[in-house]
Length: 151
Image (cartoon, rainbow, N blue to C red; front, side, top):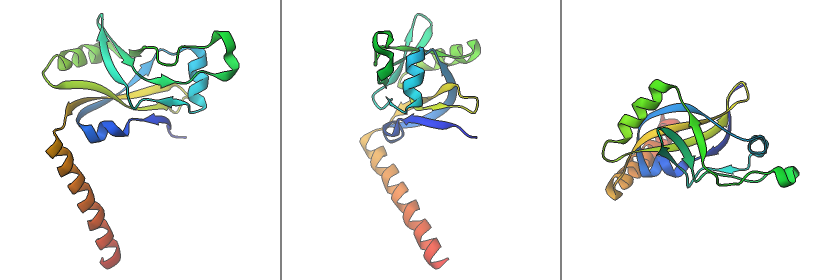
C-alpha cells in the first residue's frame, strides 16, 4: 500500500524552482479528516505562513463534511503544520532569506493512514524561466517519442 494522494499543487511546480522538500504533519479536526477521505480538498491557492514561531497552512480549502451538521469545521481555516524542532528552526532560518517561500505541494495519506503534507522551499521563477522550462519539457517529450518510434 502506497500513499493516497488527496490534492496536488501543480501550479507550484510551474511558478517556482523547488529547492528542498519535506514531509510534515497537520493538526486536523475529525470532520476535516473525513472530508479528506472523500477527496474534497484543494491546495492550489495555499501557502505556508510563519506565526509566533510555528508554521501554518493558510488558504487550503477542505470542504465541509455533509453528515457533521453543527459540529462541522470552517473550510478555509489556517491549520498548524507539525515538524520536528530541528526541521522547524532550519526552515524558519531559510525563509528569512530574500526570495525564499514555503509552499505545499501535495496533501496525502501515508501508509499508516495519517494525513501528511509535502511542503517545499521554493524560489520564484521569472517569465523567461517558465518559457525555458516549458521548452525543455516539450523537448524531452519529443525526444522520448523519437526514441520509442526509432530506437
